[in-house]
Image (cartoon, rainbow, N blue to C red; front, side, top):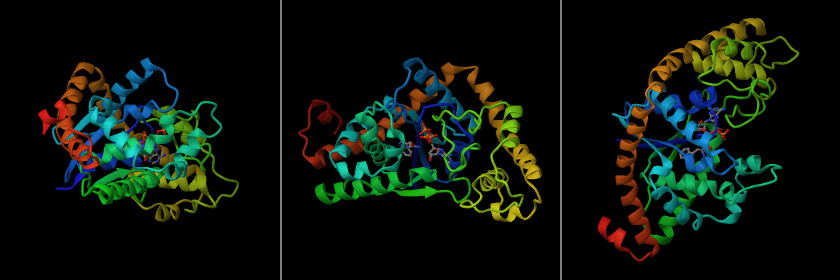
Length: 333
Ligand code: ATP
Ligand code: LTN
């Protein structure tokens, strides 16, 4: 069985982009692979945040993961900060990465943008992400297209560490979907739909009210032509709606385009398909959210399972770089 690992940040409410681009493939992977899924709360600290809100979002996100079908009986589901090995291996990864390669990360450039305060953590973020992945001897990482560059860096760091210090890590592969890997903002279709962006009309939330979803899709930006054609470069708005409809119905966006004469019918079908897609998730969420203690207990169990693997890998990495074993490490070894 292949080992699959992926993570999602509690940095805002889960979007349709998260679901279509990543979470659905997490659920599918559980049937065939040995999956480890993580709510990466340490990554959410890289930008300014409110502590009470972070706590609430972390629990909400874990509940959403259960609602979409992540099944703790068939995978390992946990919160990153509950397994301290992540922070520790991240340091070794920071010392493996160069400033030059971290500086080239487009997510850093986008998020740092013209912010007044840019944390050191935002800069070294990909080293923590590499640690997340490498701790579990991961073979495959299902992510949206925006994470391609971080995955490449993870592969480079794993390879470099192995070359310098001897075989320690499995070098993972990215698994990026063909359809739905990059859902765009409905108001600015040149930009990724993102949960931490302030774009209420452009972002659809997984737990959003159906009437509000319909309204947002009806008002989505298209263009001044009338032709329905799948051409993300020239027609980003229309292509985004086609991609969403395709992702929701399991079809091909270019093929769908041929069925429409105008934008109105496309928007109506897209809205209906998206509402149908999220309806069962919303129902399940309402049930699970009624018992937050049960969710917390599942997370506690998941952290225990994760730690067992993470501690072994960290011990291997510590030995490889030449850290002297302390009493905690000798107990474990
Ligand atoms: P933020 O806006 O805070 O950066 P995010 O939603 O972009 O958050 P994560 O929560 O870390 O990022 O993403 C979880 C998963 O969802 C990742 O695999 C990411 O690639 C995927 N994802 C995020 N946005 C989209 C999108 N618009 N389309 C497809 N996949 C996406
Ligand atoms: N960087 C990712 C979130 C993330 C992740 C991971 C994804 C953190 N650690 C490990 C896959 C594997 C993001 O911004 N979407």
